[in-house]
Image (cartoon, rainbow, N blue to C red):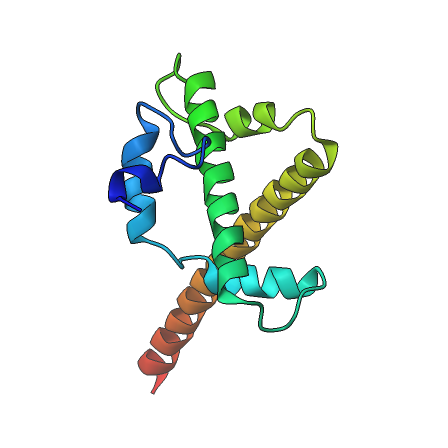
Length: 141
């Protein structure tokens, strides 16, 4: 089989336009989600060590889905000139499980940001308090 006919068998990958550069860069980064996909596949009932071909196929499907989703989000948000979380939520609005999970993850992310900020603030206050105590002890001795 020649190189030119190798990619023609898959209609989803034979897209024209801006998706072609993404596909060539994707081919260079093959295996980037391998470990995560192996764990997810095991969690959904596959073998603890699935076949590399199965993982590669899953990775192809996932990367193609994410790429398509991002391209659609770019089209949706092209009026503003940048992507936003709302663009993605709009695209998955008709899939309630995905939409609910995304909202849950966004909510958890916001809670983690607030907790980190509170921790950093508390840490900063403690540091200042210790420095003040050290100054007081240093001046009384």
